[in-house]
Amino acid sequence: MAAKLYQFLGSPFCAKARKLLEFKGVEFEVIEVDYLERKELLLASGQMTVPAVTLASGETIVDSARIALRLEELHPEPTIFPPGWRGLHVTLADYIDNQLEDAVYPAAMADELAYYAREGADRAALWRLIRERKYGAGFVDRMIAQQTNNWQRVKAALAPFEEQLSSMPFLTGRIGLADFSLYGQLFYFAFTGELKIPAELKNLIAYFGRMDRISSRLDPSA
Ligand SMILES: N[C@@H](CCC(=O)N[C@@H](CS)C(=O)NCC(=O)O)C(=O)O
Image: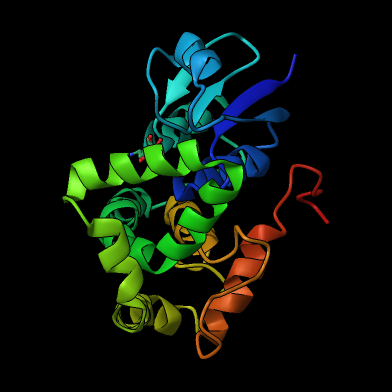
């Protein structure tokens, strides 16, 4: 039996988990969770957020950081911790998942809202409600109205990563956990099918392609 990844298409943490499963060569199927009807996710994981992964053994893991560590335990090769860099990868991944995400996600809000609106007015309404409960009334429309500011913030937050990738293929040379986090955040600008990473971030565009091409079908010795 294949593993199952419960996901929302536009979620950066699900993109991170998906790529980790592919890198580790774990056979899995994607369960696209309906934003309103989460019964299967709830029964499998005991909670309502994604990503959640149910392994072939029946074990279910929630939260992309935990999924990463558990996959590393179960499938140590290929590793997500280049020797000597574990602490840095854990710290940098945490920064990317939290601080960088704060800078990145407002720029993708219009696309996310449009996506959920296509899924149905009820789904868009719940998506909006969940964000506005957390960030306050009017948050979604205010963010969408500030697109120029949002993109400036994205470019400033991504600039150090763009610089880092000018001399190496992955953040610390060899691929590691933080690369999966950064791939997840960049996926905000790809989930519509159109790549929206700003054109001047050429290293990040090439890097996204490099990460995106990692697949469980890849022969690591090739
Ligand atoms: N720290 C968690 C964050 C997971 C998270 O925030 N998931 C969002 C989707 S990106 C979610 O399920 N939100 C619930 C909702 O929108 O109802 C992780 O790394 O997996």
